[in-house]
Each structure stands twice: as C-alpha cells, then as structure tokens.
Length: 229
Length: 382
Image (tube, rainbow over the protein chains, first blue to last red):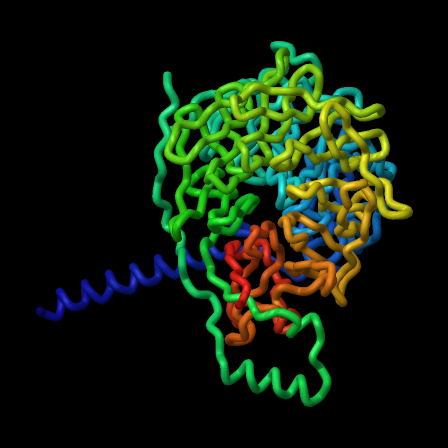
C-alpha cells in the first residue's frame, strides 16, 4: 500500500467515524428522542393506571395491598393527591373509559383467581364514584370493550378456583346488568383481548364479532366466527 | 357429524415424587417434640401423607382442579396450548379430551368412580355440558326446552349429572339422569337463578340459588328444594358437595368480606369448621363418606390446604406430610378426597430464592398466581 492509498483509507475512516458519531449524537438528542426525568415518588406500586380527561393520571395499587386507594398524579405539578374511593378492592378489575369521560370498572379482587362481581363508574370531573349493580358473578381480570354504539361489553374474568372463568358476556343496559338470555361460550384466558365492533377482527387464538347495530335487545348479540388459523 | 373423541398427550410431568420421607429427620423432630411437650394433634395425630406431584399447570391461565375418584383419577381445566382445555390425570398420564363439537375451549368438572367424566364445551353458539363414559364418545347434555346452553358441574357414581340450563328463563338448576334426560329442579321462592354443584348416589343435589340478598346454599331432594341454614350473622353461602350419607359442605359468609367452611348434617343444621391459626377465613370444597372434609383456609396473606375431621378439627395439610427438604412447595387448596382418604391438592413449588424479595422470604405469597399450579396426590400413611 503506497502513501496515497494509505492516506485515502485514513480519510475515509475518519469521515465514517465522524459520520457515525454525528448520527449517534443527533439520534440521542432530547429534542428527537425525548428525555427521562425522575417524577414524584409513588406511594405504592401502581398496578392500574389511567390518563384522565382532566389531564391527571389516576392510579391504584394491588397485589398484597388493597386497590381501594386511588390517587391522582398531576404531571404539571408532580403532586400526588388522594382520590375518593370506590369502597372495595379494585385490584384485578377491568376498565374502560365511557364517552362522557367517566371510567367504567368491572370486577375486582377477593384473592388470587377469585373476583368480585362489582361494577362502578368513576367521574373524574367530580371525583366521585357511582356504584352500579353487580354482574352475574365475580370477575377477576375481565375485559371491557366499548362497542360502536357506546355500550360496554364485559368478557370473562375468573369467578374462583371452583368455577373458573365467568362464561357469560354481559352488556349493561341503563346501568343494569340484566339476566342474560343466553349462556355464551367462555373465553380462554382472563383479560381476553377486546375488539371494537362491528368490524371483523382476529385476535390471538379466537375471534368473534359483535354487531350492536344489528340489534341485540340490550344484551349483546355475539356471533362467534371460526377460529383464526 | 358424529363427535369424535381422542386423547392427546400433553407434556406435563407426572408421577414425580415431590417429597421424600426422611426417617432420621422425622425421628429427631418427633423426639424433640415429645420431649418438649410440643406434640399436638395438628402435627402428629395421624401418620403423615406421602405426596406425589401428578401435574403441573401453566401459569397465566385459569387453572381449575375439580374432582378426584377412588382410583386416584383427577379432572380439571387449564390453559393448554392456545386454549383452556379439560384434562384428566389417569394412571400417571395427563391427557386432554378433544371433542369435534368444541370450537375452542372445554373443561372437565367431575369424575365418578367408573371414570365417567362430566364437563363443558364451547360450541359455535353456546356452552354445552357433556358426559363421557370411559373410552366412549361424549354425550351432549341437552338444555331445557326453550334454553340455549347447559353446563355440567358434578357427577354421581351412578351417572347422574348436576349443573344448570340457561336461556331466556335465566339460569336453572338441572339434573340429567343416566339416560341424559334433563329435569329442572324446583325454583325456590325469591330465587332469581340457581345452579346445581354436586349430587350423590341417592340423587340428592346441592348447589347455589341467587337471591336479592346474595347467593344461598340449597339442597334439592325429591321434588323439593330447601335453603340451607347459614352461620349466625351471615347472609350468603354455597353448598358445593354432598356425600352418600347426605352430609354437605361449602361455606357461609358475607359477600366479599369473610367466609367460613361449614358442614351441614342430614337435618340441614350448620356447623362452623373453623379456621387455621393465622387466618379467619376458610372454604370447604369436598368430603368423603368417612366425613373427612377438605378445602382451603386463610393463612396470613395466603391460603393453605386443610383437612377437617370430627376428632381433630381443622388441620393444615402442610403439617401432615412426610418430612422432606424444607421450603420445597406449599399446598394452598385441597379440592378432593376419596373414600380411601387420599387427597387431591394444589399448590406452588418454591420459585427459588432469587425470585423472591427479602420481605417475602420464607413464604409462597409472592406472585403465587404467576407460578405454575402444581397438582398433588396425598396418600395417607398406614
């Protein structure tokens, strides 16, 4: 290798290194990748977390301590304040926001694999809970899915270690979980993946369609489709 | 299309001795206990059980272990593959039944001394109960006229199945006879729905009726149903199993607050079976004709499997095992007991010290639901 070739190689190597370093430096810039900073020390391990329409973050604990202790973290002030409590252990519950911004909560915790039948609704604007009628049986880790018409479909959740998963999909009508006209298939796990209707969707190991617009008399007309391959 | 049944082997460990006896260790401990006057009925009143792990059910699924017969066969359901499946442990093998009518999940909820299994399967439109004799195709348990779904929850030695039928009338307790004919059990006044959980050889049925004040334990005999007595101050309860002598076990309590294991005699009188020293709650799940009762009881922040007898009261089954290496596993629930006194129990193996934070060291209470559920057979010592 003569001197000219060696010089060319060195220059190329320097340019390459400089370019890489430059790209790395640019990629790590906070204005392009964001930046972490320590926030307030939380009072407990936050098992359930929700971004409220008020701009605050709602959280509550569980797994060794009761979930009946919701708090609100204000990201702008980094202050954590207690919220009103539902009066029961909401650890292992299912939840979804309703169209009015309130949080709909189903089920809860008695002990591992044993769920409460409770339902409630949290209003973040008034910091108040409304206790709603019980479901057909307990649900530990159910799933709530908002349907196209705004109703909520509640699926699965473990009743206890004797009866296993709750096999009854339910849709509350006028804040009432009415007696269901049909006993529909159980779903394979707690926390099954919910889907938004009415479009067909495949999820991990089973698929179903729910079309509230075709009329389900306030109960939810679930039609199972073939297992996804 | 005719249902086809086949059994699939699934890779679960079976027949693995979970705890080994140590004569020297036992003698030393026993001797010290005698010297210091520590011998209590809770520890040495009966010969220790020999324990064998018969299945390991994967974590992260709904694991239900339900019934046990005189030949040591057990049934339940668990996440197997991508679905919840019924399983039977038979002759040291864990198998799952595959019904062509099942679209995704099924379960096994009862087994009698002939090896006949009751269970449920999801079909394309609804959940349907089934009964299956050994080596035969499953027989669908029809719902009541007008209903669309059925569920089987218990089976007697003479092939009668207890469960429920549901549809536009709500949920109704039902018995299917050996020919598969469904009979609705009487609806109790004030009851909005009911399910039958257990049935004995005489056709006496026990279960639960939902009322405006909560679930209530029920016994159906002949063409009559009776609400069973609750413990003083309690409003809810459940009757889960009945033996051939007509004794019933279950629980009495307040919804979501407290619960006590109870025994009802043939006259329907209720008896509190108590609790373990580190707890106040308990739940009886099964009994045999010798009036030995098993279940689960609160123990600190977790639960322990118990056995209750008239002479010794409630005992922690973990204290009645052949001594072995400490900290190997814990029995949290006893779900069945056969006429030989063998117990079917579930629990967790120790996850290893590196997986447990210091504050939980020495316990099994840390994330027990994230561990595989172990199924154990306990054979009483001679």
